[in-house]
Image (cartoon, rainbow, N blue to C red; front, side, top):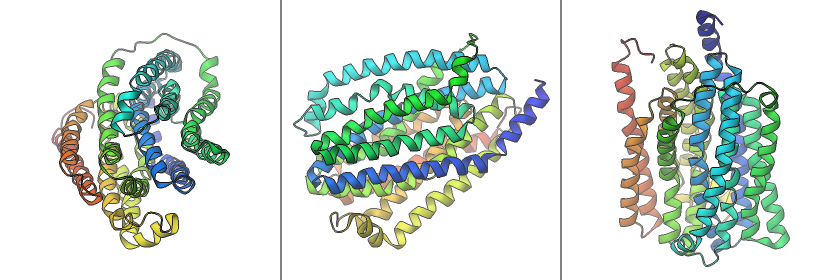
Length: 426
């Protein structure tokens, strides 16, 4: 394809940000609703102490799952690059190359973490190590499924991408309710994870069957591992920032307080997850434009507006009617959750903005965006280790770290603006 025609094609795809963001936000909200219903159902079907155990384990698994997004981000980046270069054989080679290695990696990590189960269960004050082994089995496909999602995202196939993500959440909800109802209790809520992974992995394989039938042109993947490493650092940092509070709360708080904190976290994170689809839709567009030398800041500005409207809107609802929301969804089972809903939601709002900016710079190959997040992690761990006697103290720490995480990535954008007059794409 002629370079000028390629630029026009990429710019036209970028103009679809509103439509593709709408698709991903809609599916993201559906997935978020199913994830929330999963937590709500488990909170209703299990005792507060059982729910606290389940939520701490699912939060631990969530960190691992979010870490696997480093693979999705890297695959998206290189898929978008090959797609911009009109190289479908390169996409097919990247996909098959990555699938083999991520399945092997997931299997090895499963064995390692299973061996560490006594140490982890001791820290979390859980007396049954099998509660950890079950969710750890999800790791076998937890890194391979994001490879499929990354290819779909890089090719901008947002319908199958969003559908499969929502399907994963729906299957987890349905299977968990069924298994808990059958008497498996905590086990039922956990077994749903690996089963949902397996089914959705097969579904995404069907969505990519044209790549399986296509050519397998060996392509240069130089920079893939180094980019994945730094991307892993960024995604890992963000995962820890937004999930470690629940794990530490399980360690420090009483079982009753932990149940209330779980309810706060489930509702508050809607502010983070609701606009996440905007970043997902933006990433392959800014990445593709960057590869062919087209400026991208206009897309970040547009995506930031959407994130402000969606995330800010949810946070305002939490401010105006927290009693109604908590009472309608949980009844009087978690009375301590109401006073902290807006404050925790506000923390997730700043994390949502940080998530958008981090994804933008990752799409421009600027993975050093991870470094300031590491500093915020150390701060969060240190503050919670010092101030953890109540829900109030932990929520205040999370809010402070949310604000600092957003402030810490602003200098990257200001530096980009200062270089905008140069020839580098921005």
